[in-house]
Length: 184
Image (cartoon, rainbow, N blue to C red; front, side, top):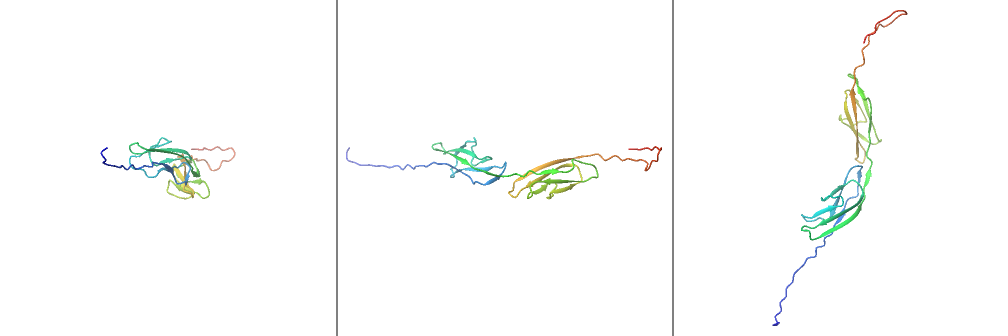
């Protein structure tokens, strides 16, 4: 009103708060998980809420599907949400099968054989890495089959202890009309 001029300014920084879901679409073994991440990097104190109910970053998923994420800035002043379809591809998991004796008597030995796909590698609980092993004691034996993609499957067999066959004694020859004693 008296002709003096004064001015002031304030700088208000526009904070663009966005979120995206990123992942490396790679093939995983059936039953394995794959990480998905919130992007970009967020400051400490940011909270995350995924459609799975998890609140960490990243989360690990085992199935393809549509996933949603809400990221909230520290202090809660900004939020951003995204929904995205996440695809996954699966390598098959080997399913080895062990065949062999289910009972092993004292002094006997037996062969356990693992069957699977032609390219599977076999690793036994005994430390051997062949498709067949010779065992001389009852027990629990397992084999892990691994395919060229690195996926693994396991089979287990329990070989029970048996009893020794009976020891029979008898006369070596009996003629007509004779009798003999067989003892066990």
